[in-house]
Amino acid sequence: MGINKVQFQKGLSMAEFMERYGVEEKCHAALVALRWPDGFVCPYCGETHHCMFERNGLTYWQCSACRKQTTVLCGTIFEATKLPLAKWFLGMHLLTQSKNNVSALELKRHLGVRYRTAWLLKHKLMQVMCEREAPRQLAGRVEVDDAYLGGERPGGKPGRGSENKVSFIAAVQTSHTGKGVYVCLKKLKFTKEAVAEWAKTALSASVHVVSDGLWCFQAITAADATHERIVTGGGAQCVKMEAFRAVNTFLGNLKTAYSGTYHAFDFEKYADRYLGEVQYRFNRRFDLSAILKRLLVAAVRTTARPERWLRAEQYG
Ligand SMILES: [Zn+2]
Image (tube, rainbow, N blue to C red; front, side, top):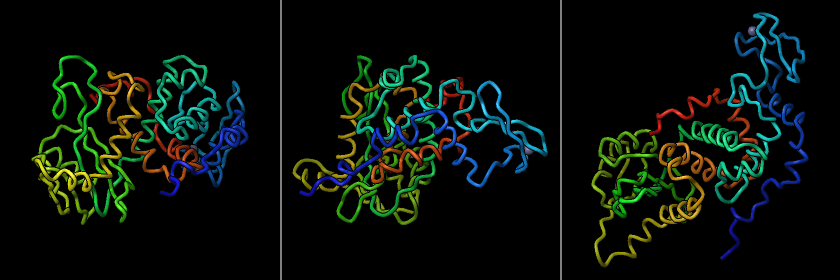
């Protein structure tokens, strides 16, 4: 066995991170360069002529045409934040470079902020990752399985269909050697309608899907996909293991990473956001040195998401 290329890649060291983004001015300059790479463009009218001034320690751009004032944070996920950008950046570094998931509680300790502040930062960044991954479509050979997480409340039945657990679909696109390349995860109730709906958005044309015999997976052909159902029962375990090696490995790692990390209630309520974070990180794990910059680009392109919106029940 050769060394694992994903685990041994260089990534962005804490020393490099501090040199690049260790102080407020550098973080601010980085956001300006990412948001307006060719110079200021008014977000309200598209004008480029402007003047700049400082007020209460913030830099403002005033448009020469419509006269509206803006900061580099307005209209992005950072809008209205009271947290210094250096802390935001450190939070993003921790979330993208750690091997395991970093909880809001850990962020609170590392950043020296209140829990509520850490929770908001974490959920805003998960929302950025989720929205960035929303158009993801898998291609080629894809292993699909039903999966269950959470369910810390007592009284549930074990295994498939346990009513206290969050059910989600896990799909892994494999390489020619059978390794996982990209994943798509989605909270789902396992009905034919829900699986058909998911297949139409998450699978590109001519995908070859491999799944087990769970009846609702028949609806995968709602997308332009071929579908191979491997129904096992006694005897054929090794065939099954081989056919689902990538998705089983992925789910095994996911369950290990999640054990003890998250508050079960939070996971159940915001499952799509948590799954979006896992999906985002997995699908970019081959280039850890670039992932922070990519997250920054996505963050300045994601619209403001206030606390009330983040805590609403749309994921419930
Ligand atoms: Zn303007």
